[in-house]
Image (cartoon, rainbow, N blue to C red; front, side, top):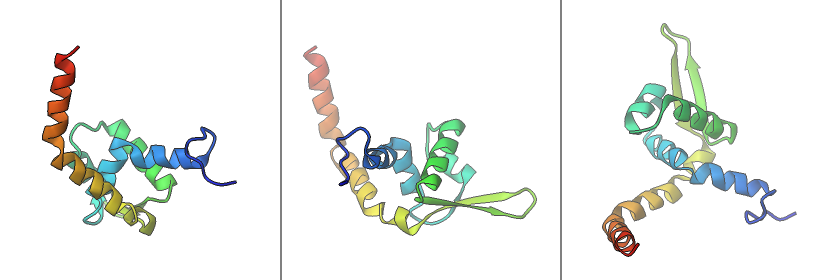
Length: 118
């Protein structure tokens, strides 16, 4: 069976859901420069709740995009890093980030025009 993300039962749709999620995109971008601790990710990604960060990291780890390494220290230190599979996403998510920042003014103007017409 060929992957078909338009089919609700296809696993490729779940992959798109994971990598298209705003928190997943921000976590991947935050890990682009290397390993980060949980607290560093929480600090970097403004607005993410502890619950959402934990769920996002677990999902990315489950999908093989992120690794979680626990270091035996007091207190315990946990680092997150992109896997090779995760690093293969960097060009895509960096492109999304670049598009969003480049076209922000245009999108905001379009929103204002749309809202004014309602």
